[in-house]
Every structure is written in C-alpha cells, then in structure tokens.
Length: 445
Ligand code: HEC
Image 1 (cartoon, rainbow, N blue to C red):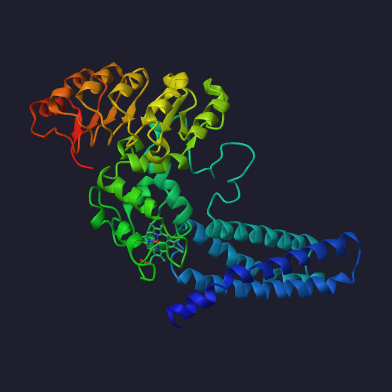
Image 2 (tube, helix red, strand yellow):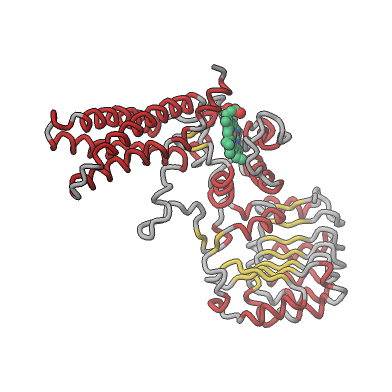
C-alpha cells in the first residue's frame, strides 16, 4: 500500500471509533437492565451488541494502527492508547464468548469481564482524545485550580513583556501546536516551549540565533503557500506579515534570547504588539484617577490614548499627523490636565514648534518622546533637559545642530537618541561622547 493510501484509510479512525464505543456501552446497559430488571428478552441483544462491539473495535484498531503509521504520532501517549485499544478488542471478544456461554461461567466472572471492558474502553478513549486534542484538553477549562489552558500570561505593564513568552509562543500555540506538540510532533518538532523550539526537529535546529535567513522555521513560513514545505501545513491559517516580522526580528536582533523584551524592539513593532498583550485591568480606567470622559474628550480631539499600566496610570498618547491640522500647539494644551500620566508621547510631523517644547517639558513622567519631522531648532531643545525620566527621544528630521545638543547630555536616563536627517554627524565629538556614556545615538531611519 502506498503511504497516501495508508494515510487516507487511517484517517477514518477518529470517526469509526465511535461505533465500538456505542455498541459496547449499549451492551453493558442492556446487561444491567436484563439482570436488575429481570428482562431475559434482552439477553440475546447483549450478546449481539457485544459481538458488533468486538468486531467494530477490531476494525477501529486496524484503522488506528494505519493512522499511526502515517507519521507524526509517537511517544508514551500513543503506546498506551495502542495497547489499551488492543486490550479492548480482546476483552470485547472474551465478553461476547463468556456472555454467550453464560451457564458455563460464574456470574462474578461475567460481570468482571464487562467491568474490565468498560475500564479498557475508557482508558483507550481518554488517551486517544489526548492524542488528538492535546493532553490538557479535558482539564484546560476546569473551573478550579490553575488554568493551564491559558497560554498568555497577564502582565502588569507593557515594560514586562517579553517577545518570546508573551507574543511568539501564543502565535505558535494558535497556529502550529496542533501538529507540533508532545504525542503529535510532526517532523519530530515540538513548538510548545522555548526548550522544545531550541531542540528543533528531525533535521536539526529550526532557528539559528542572529541568523533568520538560515533558520528553517523562517524559511518554511515565508515560502509560497503552495510549496510543499510551507508551514503551517494543510492549508491551516498562515502567519501574518507582522507575525513573521516579529519572529524574524526576535531571531535576528534578539538573538533568540527568551528574555529579550518588547521594549527593546522598534516602535512600529511595539505599537503592533501592545493590543495583543494581556495587560491587567486595562479596562479599569477609573483605577488610575483619570475619568474615562476625559480620555474620550481627548480622543474626540484626535488623540489616540492607550493605557500602558493601570497601576501607575501610565498612558501612551499619540497625535496622528493628519489630526493635527496645524493646531498642534493648541491641542497640546489639552493634555496638561493629565500631564503626569503621559509616559509616552508622539507628536511626530504635527508641526509643533520650539515654544511648544516648554510645555512638553512639564510632562515630568515622559519616558518616550517622538517629535521627529517638526520645525524644532536648538533654541527649543534646551527645555527638554527637565525631563529627568526620558529614555527615548526621536529628533529625526528636525533643525537640531551639534551646538544645540549639549543640554541633552544632562538627561541621565536617556538611552536612545534618533538624529537621522539632521545637521548632526556620527563623527561629531558630542555624539562620540554620548555613545561612550551608553546613549545609543541612531542615524538612519
Ligand atoms: C496541519 C499540521 C501542521 C501544522 C498546523 C504545522 N505544521 Fe509544521 N510540519 C508538519 C509536518 C507534517 C511536518 C513534517 C513534514 C515536513 O517536513 O514538511 C512539519 C515540519 C515542520 C518543520 C521542519 C522540522 C524538521 O526538522 O524537519 C518546521 C520548522 C515546521 N514544521 C514549522 C511549523 C510552524 C512554525 C508552524 C506554525 C506556523 C507549523 N509548522 C504548523 C505539519 C504541520
């Protein structure tokens, strides 16, 4: 038989198994009714149902064996399921024969065989279910104890998010795990934990840290969907462009380090990822002392407001370029009542001027500030030195010059400074000094 034919026939196993289950259970129920209800008319039916049960169980076992040959199923779960399956077939046969020759055997033997039969059937069914649906299928939604079905942990703020645990593993869980887990590891690859990912599959490692081009996993998900190596296989829902970018980024820049944080990724990736994280109590705007009406009003004015951490009340506020309509200075004033809560602020390309920076310098909790592509010059920038928490500052495409940068050196918290498309050069003395002070000065988009 060819491999395809074996697989084709084997796949009837999951459907067929319901037949012997039904026959054997009805046989036992009839038996109970015949004995307790003293309905001897049912005796014939018990034997007949046991015979049908034993025969259909035999066929199910053969189909199951063929399915196991089609590959991808292995391990302890399969061994137990297979053994229990054959024991069920055997007990089904014995039960039929004992029941048919009832007068020759004791009642105890007759009932014991039936009891064992139901036990074997239950064990077979349970391990079969675990093989197809995953080991935690039954217990994933138990209403008590810790919920192991939950793949995504709940974070108390975005800063805690790790690329692998909080974003990549949930992608694998929803799109790959059905074929790559214990008991059903296609290509001998499991994608259920960082360790199993690192271990790789039958052809060795599937990710090479710092080298996405050489990583088999990336190759597989970026092939054309009709290529035979394309993953996920069998027309399952493919990864999105962003999901692929995220994994690639993690392998390349994060060197596939499981502790690599989302905050270390670039802005676009962070913006994409935030709505996918589970951040504790993000729905409870009241908890942070800002009423939701206030936020709604800001949104009506054109701001996008997002809660970064309900504990600290941290907000990410963005004024999109197209909403500014040359009124950025006016709009900025609307943020003053919540200025302590603005941890991230983006006013990129909105047309803010030097005079507006004095206002921004009052936002004393700012961690990230994006004011690129604005007519800002050295005169205004000095005000920013008051931002003692600032970590990331984007000044790309502004009129800043080397002379104006001096005050920024006073911001001890600064980690990244973007100066692409300005009059500043990577060789400027000031830039070299900043770099040696562990501030990453970035030239380039
Ligand atoms: C419908 C089942 C199915 C799904 C879903 C699936 N795979 Fe696979 N995968 C297979 C099979 C079957 C093989 C082995 C045959 C082969 O190498 O193409 C395999 C093999 C692989 C291999 C090669 C392992 C090795 O060492 O040869 C990689 C890498 C892989 N899959 C990644 C993924 C990723 C990533 C996803 C999710 C985006 C995924 N797979 C989802 C069925 C699946």
